[in-house]
Image 1: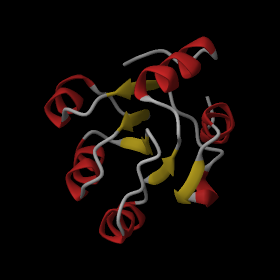
Image 2: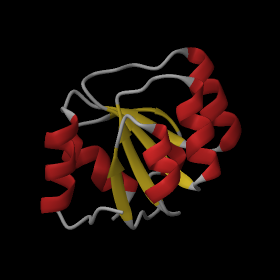
Image 3: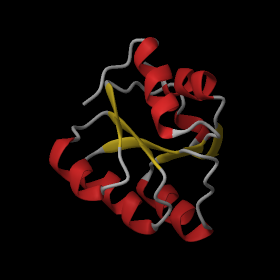
Length: 113
């Protein structure tokens, strides 16, 4: 699935990485526990989370996550966005709750990781 499709499905706002929306992802992970992300996430993945701190971006970097979507209308600070830009990670925000966002992406054919 393309990141542009994720944006549409979740009615998300792109906060950085607009130029990379045609990239493909293979699966999605929804978690607020970064240790779970480190243990279970594979590359070419999308992370849905409510955690809005720089550690989320660092975790994405370590696991080759292409895109972070902050759920529940969470908006990261400039420190998070600056780090994501530096590491070339797409960042979006959506008003959807975690459960709903996962369900929407799954029903549109994106498997879990």
